Length: 437
Ligand SMILES: Nc1ncnc2c1ncn2[C@@H]1O[C@H](COP(=O)(O)OP(=O)(O)OP(=O)(O)O)[C@@H](O)[C@H]1O
Image 1 (cartoon, helix red, strand yellow):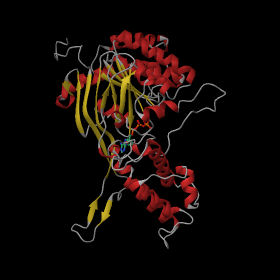
Image 2 (cartoon, protein in one colour; image 1 turned 135 degrees about the horizontal axis):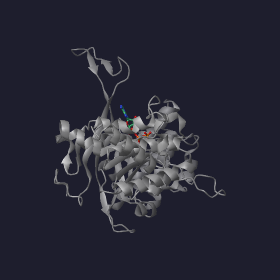
Image 3 (cartoon, helix red, strand yellow; image 1 turned 45 degrees about the vertical axis):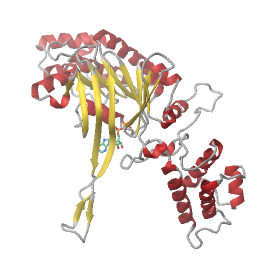
């Protein structure tokens, strides 16, 4: 029990409740200004909102490492910075040791800040080249009025040793060190103020693979020795697998899956997690390097898809209930819809489209009529849209298919959130996918 705050160490160290961070996007002086001659004043400020982190709730237990993984731009760094209040959340609450950070002011917030530290990807740019290593490590202690000069020097030297460097390097400048050593200096600096929680934002991504494991091992032993809790951000699944106890998978501002490490890697339940795992490079030289790649572009976080944000790329998009069809016919229709959307085949006669995509047997009923209409729009012998140019007809077919099928799926209508039974271990398994309805 923490005497000051009443925090009990059996409770979560950190709790996020609906944490949201939007950015108003403006670039340049006139960006976002729209001229509207029919209104007064005739100028609108049209700010685009980047929904970087959207309604994230999770807990981090004391002493654990929560890995946070996802493709570039999905909001990992923004979430890490928002937790530390380096960015002001747009919405939601962050509790640290049971206290709502938003309620803390002045001195309390300053104290809490020393409890929560961050280390960044690029050890080069986060170390001031004019300062000596000793000064760099002592700087946070000075900022928090910790110890006297002599005490800080002794602590800096002790920390150098703890992170695997020679304390005699106290007077050197950072440029004299390798990338891995510089990241160790960063670690010593973050630990100088004796934090409980460290956000590690891609701390080993800039390092050679051979050095990564060494730095990760040091981070693990420091965690044990100092009783640290880590939020470990990385896009590299093998790094996440090395260091995490539990793993959260992020996609377009949402957490889509969260489970204990073994459960997540051995029993992934979200199609996005599966796709990420399938795109891990295969070490076997006989394989051609990469097993599977995620299809399509990540949609813009300015206007993310409704419902499940992964649905526009999801290979398991659920069939809309409005039509009656077999799994096979839905799978074929889904593939056809994707191919039309990407315009990934040359115009050909209707019969050939039907043969290639539907084995010559298109779906029956209303769904079949819609498929027919789409085929007619794009087929080289089709009758649809006479007079329109070809790209208009492909666009019309795409709209027809997406509106009739993709937008009618439960995946487009409801945001998924399901708690599942774990197969490995007894931890919780959260998966944001309607396949678990
Ligand atoms: N200060 C900002 N202003 C506007 N948009 C921002 C800002 N910071 C981040 N974004 C946008 O927010 C989204 C999430 O970015 P973020 O850096 O958090 O993702 P990430 O998963 O950490 O990616 P990476 O691994 O590439 O750093 C992106 O679309 C990014 O362009």
